[in-house]
Each structure stands twice: as C-alpha cells, then as structure tokens.
Image (cartoon, rainbow, N blue to C red; front, top):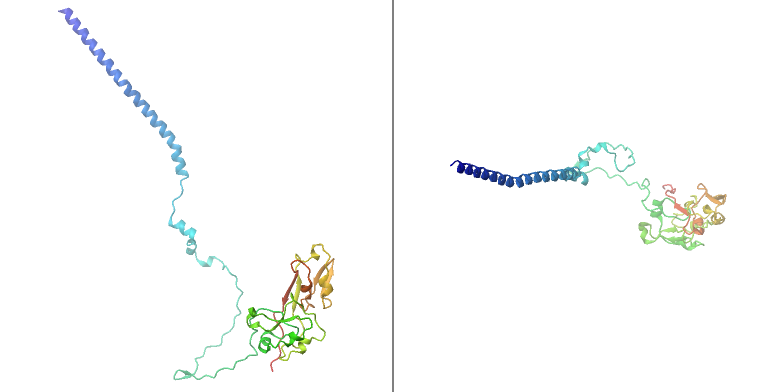
Length: 286
C-alpha cells in the first residue's frame, strides 16, 4: 500500500510539474509580445514628435477677415484721414472777398434789378493752346476776336513761313501761324505781313517777339565733340547765339523765337526747343 501511495504521489508531482512547464511556455510568448509592442509604441511616439513639432511651427496661418481686409485696403479706412498728407499738392487759391449778398428787388417774384453791362475789356485771355503767331501779333483773345482769316499775311510772306492753322487746333483753325519745322520766319526788315493786315491784329507797335529758343544739350552735336555752328551762323538776329568752346549758348533776352535755328539744326533729333510766347500785349480799349 505504501508503495502505491508513493507512486501516486510521484505521479501527481510529475503532473503538476508538467502543468507548470506548460503554463510557463504559454505565458512566455505573451510577455515577449507585450514588451515588443511597448517598444514599438515608444519608437513611433519618438518619431512622431519632431514631425508634430515641425507641422506646428510651420503651419500656415488661417486666413481671417482682418487679414483679407488689410490686403484689400479696407484696413486703412479705420485710421483718421488727418494723419495722412494729401496725395496731390495744390496751389493755394487766392482769397477773394465776396460782396455781401443782397436780396434782389422783385415785384410778384419777378426780379427788377438792372442787368449789369458786359465788360469785354477786362475779359481774360482766351484759353487756347500756345501757337507761334507772326511778328506783331496782339493779345491772343483780341487776335482771335479780330482776325478775319483772310490770308493776306500768308500771301505776302516771301519765305512762305506763315501758314493756316489746321482744323485739329479747334478755334485756332484757319488763323495764321508759323511752323518752324516747315519754314521759319526770316525777320524781314519791312515786315510785309504786318503791313498787309487790314484787321489790325498784326501791328508794328508791338515788339516782333514770337517766342524763345533753347538748346537741348544731350541732343546737340556740338555738345558731343562734333564741330557744328549752323544755328549761330544762320540766326537772323544779332547777339542771340554765342559759341563758347564750340558749344552754342542762347540769349533769351534778345531771342525773338523766329525758329531759324530749329529749321536748320542738322542733329538726328532736333536739338532746338522752340516755345511760343504765352502772353502778348494787347491794344488799348477804344
């Protein structure tokens, strides 16, 4: 009996050992897998950290209404305009004292005040583009009012320097002008154009000054080490063009604006700037 009990006890112990070994073998893969999964999670978290930091730092800012308003210029409307200087600088207007306002006299709603007469003598100069008029031309407003566009001054000019203004010049069209690019005024001694003007818009009592001329240095051949004295040789008025170191100089005080210097200039691009007079004396009111 004792032998059987001993055998049974040994068999039970062997069975328990087998069970423990099986349990250990079954738990071993589970623990290894848990360790590997934890390691993978740690590595993935470590790799995701710089990516998350990069995306957070360099993430584009969301578009907002204020930013869109700034780009479209509406933001500046919120600032008071007094803080900004005007974009266009304008000349100050002269202060003109306005007469005191008086209520017109009326009878039954009808104005009975006398109508003031029109004073043409104090009328300002006509607003036209500046053109080269022949010698002795009077004030532009009086010239346009008195010129009959007869063409007598054009016919008697010996150098065909006077032509009719083209239609594109508006109210100046048909009046006598001088186009120095086609033919310049040669400053005749007797001025037949003035003698032939019956309307009296070309008079001998006014100095025959038609404009003034200047030399454009960057276009002038003499200012580019080239010998050229054509303008000074052909000028019909004395002491207007002087040559110093081979370069011409214009005296605007004595220049009459005849346009001969521009007409004879041989430069590829005409180096003479010819400007007409903007204001001419007029005839006294009669």
